[in-house]
Image 1: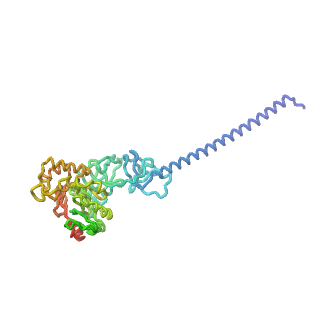
Image 2: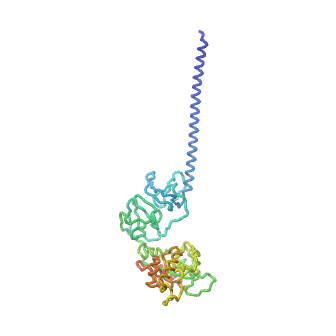
Image 3: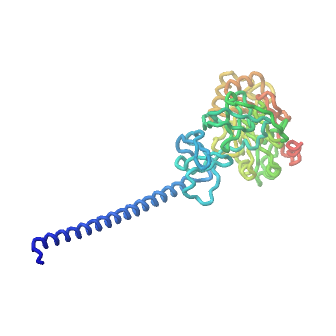
Length: 424
């Protein structure tokens, strides 16, 4: 049987079309698969790059101490999910738990010594530190539990953070309207009206019933024998006194802590002392000894005599010994310091200038330990909250904060004298 040429042509055309269509489908599917593979590879590569960038950011934002870069959230870990429980303000320092091997699971940093977290996106490392002096204070035998949604305040009573859940803590500072507690590795204050429950707890820690303040004048370095006065101190005397205080873990106070102790706002350890230095002459020579032994002291500076920057040290507080009224013979009694008889306006101008020069210090020391009701009232009016004298007795709670006694240290006083003040 003969097949007609036209039919053959049609059959061949159909066959070729079917083959072409099949090949086209195959090629299309192959190209599609290749595109999908390529897209998957691209997406995988992008994901890896993204993860790598996130890991780099996590590592760069981690540190033992970090600072918040904005007002940000605080979290708790609720069975693997991070739940918002509060907020912390910008520029606050946080201490973090150590992380051995940082990975992508560390997108939330755990805060040191508590169960709160912060996002890696909201912090950067810092070398700034948190004031931890409160760790030396003796806690009150009081435990408080806060309400929900409570604001916590810093040492200047600025808002630091808010926590939405109740917090229970012992009281470290007891003010009229606030409790001071330890939270987020710092001392913070909570309003008493925001406390839901207060209970008394047992406390066996010994606290100071009184504290000594000691007074040095002039330190003369080895080879300088130009002063034989009883208030001139050798390097050996200062070194032995300060070494004793350091070796015996004596807490060296600042003036604000002394005032808080007098008001009954804090409890101090039994071994506590305030070191003071008067006038400013040669006072810079004390700094190496303070830094060597890690002790704090307060310099009562006659602020017109020496530039303040001559005494820069994190271990040395600068307070006022008047601006220019440390002169004998001005008034008719005692050594004659002018603060007891000069006109009121002249005294106030001097005291206010001294405060301004010394960063608005709140602590004052009467020249020659001489004072009167007249001078005390002017010291108060000038903005000082406390004043020091002599007296050779210990500081007790409830005393007049404008008559704070000190023990003058003479050149003949050895370590036994300091030991008796601190340990007896």
